[in-house]
Image (tube, rainbow, N blue to C red; front, side, top):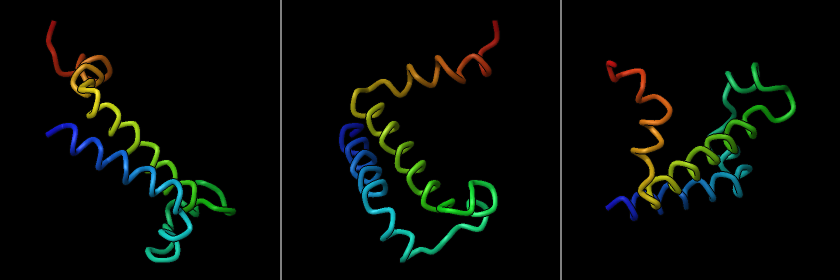
Length: 81
């Protein structure tokens, strides 16, 4: 099941990065991104960053490394020594 979900995340991320202008035209700009990420393409940058995160998560799911990644990064916050 992780392969299918990971492939879907991967595909969605690639589409979001490649077709950023289409998403911008159909879903509009994001006020927070326009204020905080720059005036020339703040929403475009945020759409691309979301796409890159989806690609990264998709690769982690397909390769079955999601649990290892989470334990190595934020897992130490929840485990008592």
